[in-house]
Length: 371
Ligand SMILES: Nc1ncnc2c1ncn2[C@@H]1O[C@H](COP(=O)(O)OP(=O)(O)OP(=O)(O)O)[C@@H](O)[C@H]1O
Ligand SMILES: [Mg+2]
Image 1 (spheres, helix red, strand yellow):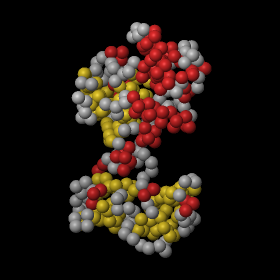
Image 2: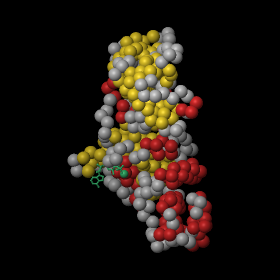
Image 3: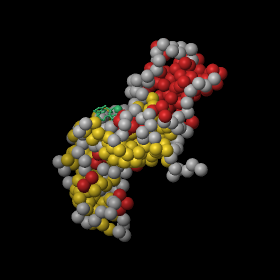
Image 4: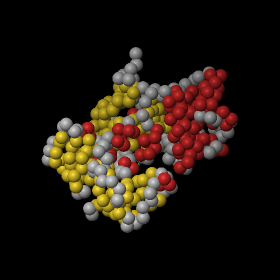
């Protein structure tokens, strides 16, 4: 019986170079049945290359691709139980929507009646029941995207591979379509690899993200892991803005589960649970998210981890105000949500900020150069 522990797809130590350029340097990952995993990372980091290796459109130098227990790493694309949707969709423009969706079934010599039935099901799945007889050149970009998806799903592959499937769509349609892809994927329970360079798209569509950079997996984890427990400086800066603050562990109090860190602002008291085997004297990097920092008037009560600062500038964005605050010659970005019901500060105002005890901490040596 299939369990969570039996992966549908397993990548084992995959290496790939183009000439002298080593693009993938030992990629290993397990993808569970029904899971949606997203490959994400900066342009040129090797996402498409890795996806093409899974689909059989690029050869690997070494390593293995195991699909449902079988090593498929050397098989041609049409011998693999995977189906790839290319960025360009690669539909036949003068053929009807229905013929495009049924194309693979026709190649597999399905009887005409069965093809019609299956195409009908798929048209309904992607909400295009009325459009089966239209040719591709007479439907919109979003509709083409749905046809490409339906065509890939027609032959019921074990794994669906989607390379930036939303990149041709405008911003609003992207959001609608990504929700639709996720709904369909969950409803039919198909194991899916989704590729995007858009961090927010990756966060919102995935069960887990595989973040690639410099040829290696920087972190593989749920959106919550990636955002709240980033494994290194690159990941911390990858989604959303963070304030980085260097520090040194000066005391560890087991009884109060508190670690004291000396920083440019002064001493900070942080939760013990954020420290992974840190010792006194260790250099650390604090990852402080702008939305986690309470902001108050300078005459408010002083609490633990509270520091005085001056508003340098602000940007009103409706649902939040982004403040740049100067504290001890260092700038900190603070986002204050729901500005309608909170005090709005002006340039030059004296304020107090509080660094939360739950602030995420990285060992200093995980710093990776940003690109
Ligand atoms: N056929 C090829 N020959 C030579 N170099 C290639 C080839 N395909 C890809 N590369 C190089 O390999 C690296 C990874 O490319 P890849 O297309 O996988 O990146 P990507 O992460 O998908 O980027 P993007 O977000 O821009 O689509 C790049 O440096 C690219 O120039
Ligand atoms: Mg790509």
